[in-house]
Each structure stands twice: as C-alpha cells, then as structure tokens.
Image 1 (cartoon, helix red, strand yellow):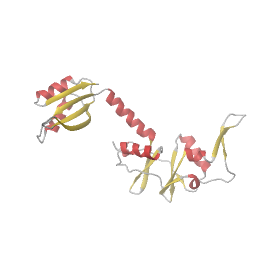
Image 2 (cartoon, helix red, strand yellow):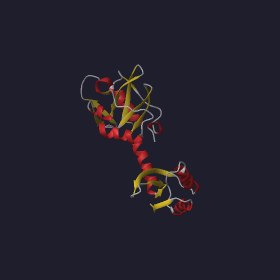
Image 3 (cartoon, rainbow, N blue to C red):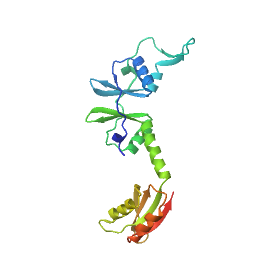
Image 4 (cartoon, rainbow, N blue to C red):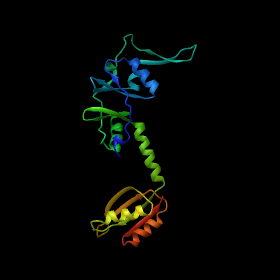
Length: 215
C-alpha cells in the first residue's frame, strides 16, 4: 500500500506570518496536531502541538470553566518563529511501511505529502496505525499454505487462480529455496480460515503442498 492511498484530504495550512494563536485555534477546532506552513504556496515548515506548548500555557477561566491559554512571552509570535523548517516529506508513491519507519526514526507524528513540488496532503501516525490495524485484523482470520511451484512460466499464475476460484484472496507471498534440491517454496498467506479445500485443489492440480495451516 502506498501513502497516496491513505493521505488525508482537505489539507489545512498556515501562512508563514500567521500568529500562533491562529495555529492553536485551528488545531483545537479541527482536532489535529500538525499543520503545514506555506510561503507563497511553497512548503517551508510544519507546526505541531508540541511546538505550541513551548509558547502557550493552557488554563481555565474560574467562573465559566472555559478553556483558555496564555502566552509565555509578551511578544505575539508568528508560526515561522516556532515551526520546524524543511520538514521530512514523502511522495504519494512512498510505501506506507517505509513512511512508518520515517516517523519512528525522526520521532515525529506526521509527514507532509508532496508531489511535483506541491503539497497535496498529510499522512499521520494515526493514518498509518489504522492501516496496520486493518492488516492485523486480516491476518487474524487467515491461513498459510506452503507450495512447491516448480520452474514453469505460468505456475504462480495458475496457483493464484486456483486460490481465487476457491473463494480466498492472497494477503502476502514469500519465497525461499528448501532442501538439498533447493526447491522454491512459496508461502501464501490467505484471508480464509478454511484452508482444506484450497490445499486439496492445489494438490489436485499437480502441485506439492508442504504445509497448510489455518489461523
């Protein structure tokens, strides 16, 4: 899966000279924690909830209980004074797993998505977590079948078709040589917990099934 498949639509941005109070209000009203900053349409930085904490102190009005905040300095700051400049970005064609590694490596919570020099969206740790939860859910109700496919040019396509004809979809595929003959064994993870009919059909078509395990 690629970043473009999960990029948040309707991107919200700030101008480089917008003040931090505006940034705070936008984050609060839209329930977001990252806002890209543009200068003449070009991405120049990103403001995060953490950045705002360096200049704003949350509090409450005693009478009404409404949330409010106070500046740590008497000077009204603009976002260019607190933003992270030259943020890490990704393209829509970037692999989601690699994007997750970038978030972890740089200890950040969001990545601007840029294509042909233009900001087109944001992908956050929440977006990526949702993908992984979906994948884990699929794996929970899955089976694995290990098959020796041989050297024929169409063997992979043929086995894939057999799997599909028996109502299963391939979640992932791996391959490694095994035994003295270095036979190429393919490991199919399928989205079914009833692997028996699929295994029987594959063997019935002349392929060697090494293992078939549900769950």
